[in-house]
Length: 232
Image 1 (cartoon, one colour):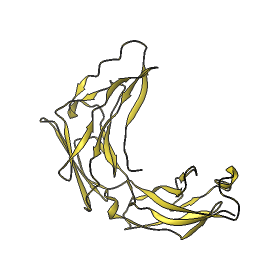
Image 2 (tube, one colour):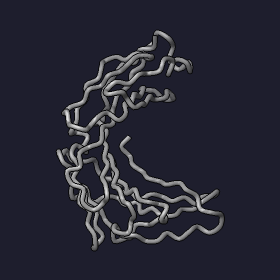
Image 3 (cartoon, helix red, strand yellow):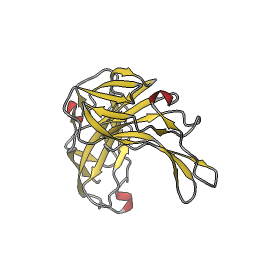
Image 4 (cartoon, one colour):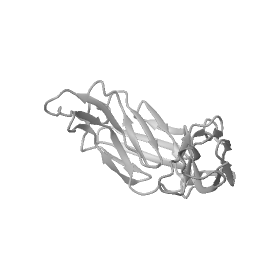
């Protein structure tokens, strides 16, 4: 859940792969910095063109270098696709209340400070057991204005068992009746061991200088909370 990859998949016509114009930060139209606890990406107006980020652009998170995926047109056997621009964190985020991100190209510098991006900033409380076909309520702390649970993930500890993921109403999500048992995976009356994790956002951007907007979410810490699933 922590990985971050941005790929825009609009197709070019048949023939040679289009050239990707090189862009520095100021060249990217309507740029928004979007990110999670695994990395950040630059969302921009690809109707203008599909840009490749200039080699001069570098990025750091809490003064550590990030791995840059520069984007641009890429050829596939069937069509050409526009790969997005992203920066992956090479190491887990430090346990800082505020994460500092900086992108620079020698001409422009973007400064971003995000509160609570490090998973260690959060704790969650989950029930010890959940039942297929019932509601599940998860609480998180601290209580930060505007931050809410975006998704709840319930993942059985077994190969081939489909995880459950859904956007909650408030802090509660409903597990569909027969979500697992209707496929004859677990037997009725049995239990499965699983984990619960959540995605939180939008996180407060204490500073967003450079892009037009900053939009961040984060995942709660690994290892996820253990829980027992009951199959009625």
